[in-house]
Length: 435
Ligand code: ACO
Image (cartoon, rainbow, N blue to C red; front, side, top):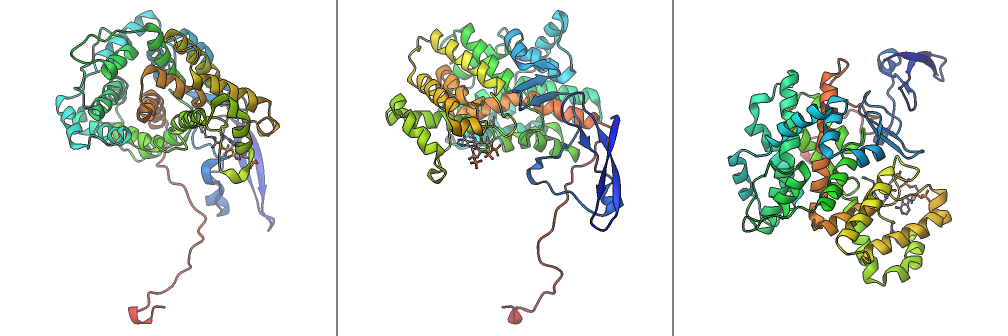
């Protein structure tokens, strides 16, 4: 990293310390505070990491004020329009888009790794049928390290690559198996003549008794959902994967920790919440009740939020939401659902909110989750599987970020400090003397 300037920190007692300031290729500069504790004996305090860059990275860039999302420099709009998900995986992992030969080779490598160890299939029988599929995902993905321990040397670049390709290839199989187990249908083996996303849909919706008919518009829609969710820089689950990996844990265990974090409703569960909100509002009267609902959302005492609106980083239209709205329209048209009441309701809500002073002044815009639930529902994906699809898409981002961290010579075990507010030293009293 190149030092761009320095910052002087002055304490009340007259001491001061100079700290280097680094510039990124784009985005805000960062003050290097590593010398702060050794030289000045103080920590910085930043719960939720609102102002802390935990690493340097070359993978994904977000400008939340402008509504920009770049993977390896390429705008998400261009990637979602011109590339398929595996091209985006190649880009995130290798740093460049593949040429035609590289794409062919990569597609083949991934296709050749789509099956899971037959004994792994038996692991599913240990779960209750009614278990949430995300709980199954946490267990099964973590268990991959018990099956693929021939490539777990994290200091060997080839081993890291094999594990990454296995994860990218096997996640669709694992997600589809979690679904099939839940609904009591037989597992479907992958079919490598199909594209990555068509194969996933075949394993999700196909049954051995009938040939699954691939609809290219629906495949493209799901492929786009995967592209839009593939990476999002240092979000909670990615930071979890990095932190777990910083101790030297194996990649399968790290990705399992990312899945656990993603499961939380404040992270991966929001599309489910947005769809539930629309369904409830529809039951209460739909478009006619939009005004009343928005009034409730603005009332702080109501505890009601407009789910799928607002974002910690985007203070502008989430670029993924625009693409998702486009896809939503395409899918509903293809399925002959142009009059889908939930889509109409979502559009009406968006229109009212975008013109309302409450939302305008707080820079609250639709996020990717506002429309993705409607698309997934139309594709036949049950609500309980939404977060599993998200984890399938995000696996490539997690593993690319993990690999970047392991390859970084500055990498250290992640170990935040704290501002202690507890009791000072005291002695244990005998039981009879305790209050
Ligand atoms: N509906 C109504 N009011 C909202 C909403 C919303 N969806 N989001 C934010 N606000 C209001 C807050 O009440 C606050 O108002 P105030 O300044 O009068 O107190 C103001 O806007 C700022 O909101 P914060 O909560 O401080 O914003 P923050 O950046 O911390 O939170 C978050 C972002 C959590 C995403 C929030 O907007 C939210 O809860 N949205 C709904 C849930 C959602 O859609 N999450 C998906 C995020 S995208 C993803 O994870 C893939």
